[in-house]
Length: 476
Ligand SMILES: [Zn+2]
Ligand SMILES: [Zn+2]
Image (spheres, protein in one colour):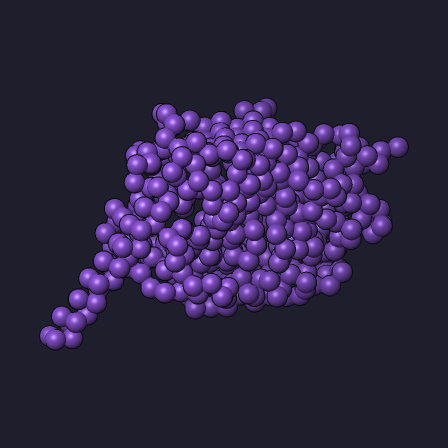
């Protein structure tokens, strides 16, 4: 009983302490009378999960303009930006090469307001459940104020002894990495008519930067009538047009098998936007799936359709073409069925680390099963064969899209399966100059002397080699 009283008073003390930290910050930063704020500047973003090698930052895009208008009373943000390609030569995936300006306009909700300097203070003061403790990050001491938005979900704000908010940390679920730390950092605060706002904003996710902004202009308490709106121009990943002739109208997430030849099935994804296909290959005594993209739900679809087509054959392997997150998201579901993952050996240390990360926010079927994914490391060439049919995996060289990148070659059928490196219907797939990734794909095929009739795109569609040569800038 006594212990409970002590615990309760300690808890109360904590709440009061958290409140005093927040109230001090609100005073120092000028939060109390702030109803809205607009900030703008220039910077960069790095697409997460699309890096050229698994441990480096994602491909860079520069913001030539970036403006956010925050309405704290309605907890809404209007975000408008213009992005351009950020590096040459290109590294990594996402929508590269991005030849034009990508315009984006979106309205974000309360969750994103929480991850802004004044937004956090306002929400934490309202939350009533905030607690505080001392914490040290990179040698610097902070008052770390934790708010839990729903039991499981944790958001921590780090305040300096002067009372400015320098960091916010939270954890989000990711199909590949499980629980992922997201850290928002605010520095170089300046005063704008009594309101303090950082002139340097950065965000990192897991171990890499994803966003950085140098603020040029801050305007507190501007009119902020934010209405739901959404607009994108220039960088829409529309590789499959559901309205185009021949495109089936099917619900998102369905895996639609298209028979390309005896025993080779294109497991298409009718999703508009950026579809992710797979290829199912039948051998005498077993089956092989090339690619398990996006998510557990997509993997379940693929497994169900495979079972329907071949009720009595076992899926023996799943092949991963490269370690971009859109090509990995379904692999863990295959591991639940004890199907080993074939990938280039350079990818395996990353996969093993990613797959053993904690998954407390949204445990998937593999996490719940307690099983471990099995990896089969391939070298520059890896062959799966039953004597009649084979799949040859060939490692790409000089490809800045992704390291550890396999294409699959079916010599009997003269088919070649590739992921991401030639996307025929991609809006920015302009011919002149050709995409360096497509050129690299073509040059690798020539180097390997592969005799190909038909290319099978894991994002796009099937295409003849003559078309690939043309888009690679290698047509004679
Ligand atoms: Zn991709
Ligand atoms: Zn890729």
